[in-house]
Image (cartoon, rainbow, N blue to C red; front, side):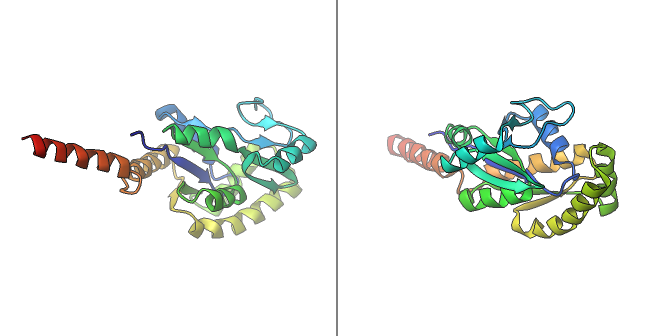
Length: 209
C-alpha cells in the first residue's frame, strides 16, 4: 500500500531566505511545489503561474467563498492563498508537496493539516535580515521599516513550528532540511501501512516454513 506524501511547509520572516532554500531543495529532491495565488503585482523577473498565480481581489474573494484555499491571508495589504485541491490530491497519491508561505498562512495550514512538517527559517541575525531586505531593492523607506518591525514580531512564532533551521548558508540549511524530511519519512505513524505489510509478510513466511 502506498503511503501518503508529506506536506512540507517552509516559512519565516521576510528576508530569511526561504525562497532561495526552497529553490535549492527543488533542484536536489523531487517535490511538487504548490504555487500560491496572490493579488499583489508581480515583481521584476517573476512569472505568472510559476512564481504566483496573479489574480484580482474579486477573483480571490470568489475563491474564498468557494472554499478553494488550503489557507489564505492578507499580508501587507495583499491576499495570498494556497490552492487546496491540487495539493491534497498530490499528497493522497504519495507525492511530497512543499509550500513556501508566510507565517500567517503556515499557522492556518497547521490548523487544517496538523500532520504536515512545519519548518521555520531563521536568519543568522536581525542585522543580516535587514541587509537582505535592503538588498532586494524593492522596498520604499516606509515599507522597509514596516517589514523589519514585522520580522521582529514574526520570530516569536518559531515555537509554533516542528523545526527551526538557521540560514547561515543555503547549502547547510538545505542539508538540515533534507535530514528532517528523511527522519519524518521514518516516523512510525507515517509508516504504519508498510509496517503492517511487513508483519503480514513475515507471518506468511513463518506459516509456510
